Amino acid sequence: NAGVTQTPKFQVLKTGQSMTLQCAQDMNHNSMYWYRQDPGMGLRLIYYSASEGTTDKGEVPNGYNVSRLNKREFSLRLESAAPSQTSVYFCATAVRGGNYGYTFGSGTRLTVV
Amino acid sequence: AQKITQTQPGMFVQEKEAVTLDCTYDTSDPSYGLFWYKQPSSGEMIFLIYQGSYDQQNATEGRYSLNFQKARKSANLVISASQLGDSAMYFCAMREGMTDKLIFGTGTRLQVFP
Picture 1 (cartoon, chains in turn brown, purple):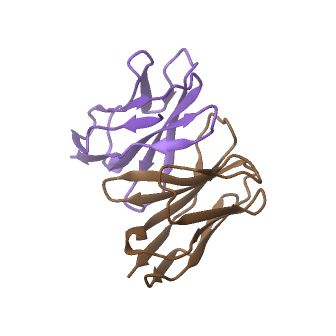
Picture 2 (spheres, chains in turn red, green):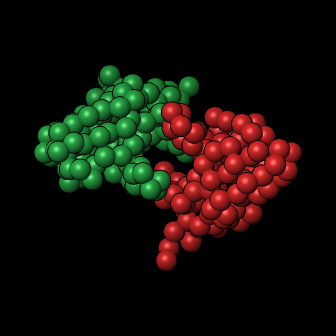
């Protein structure tokens, strides 16, 4: 099925551990995004990539790095996880400048203890 | 700077009634897009409706319509004939044309009661 696949769906990390959240799409979309969702704060943009080979910071980039490996894949890395990074992470994709909805993955629930 | 504001943390509406969810935005980019998403308790993000900054008419999609007032920088979502299944979080979002960056408001929790 066409769509956006995020892995893993759930993860528990200890403070200081590192991990990479994976996002892959088969929509042939140019733009990809990483968001975090916390209660009462909506979705906040961490990083985005308007095209293969480019990445830009969003609203809350500190503590994260990203890689746009190719057109299909956009990964988010936590080098040294902190409890403040406990959140639900969503990946999204879109046609650049498109006038229809963005496609979201099902989310990754991350807990840092 | 790009900004989206939703001032209603929660709203209640009776089944079959209409409800308006407020959204205001700020941007210096003349080309932008406005979106509304629904997030039920299951967590997925469901696209509802889109309005482009140059669109002359308000967008409509079934029971959803977007009341776009460009001079006031508002993009309110109107849900007509509310149903119990409309109970969810609703997010307003804006994409700037120059950067393609999409940002969200903090959301409004809508509860529909019988």
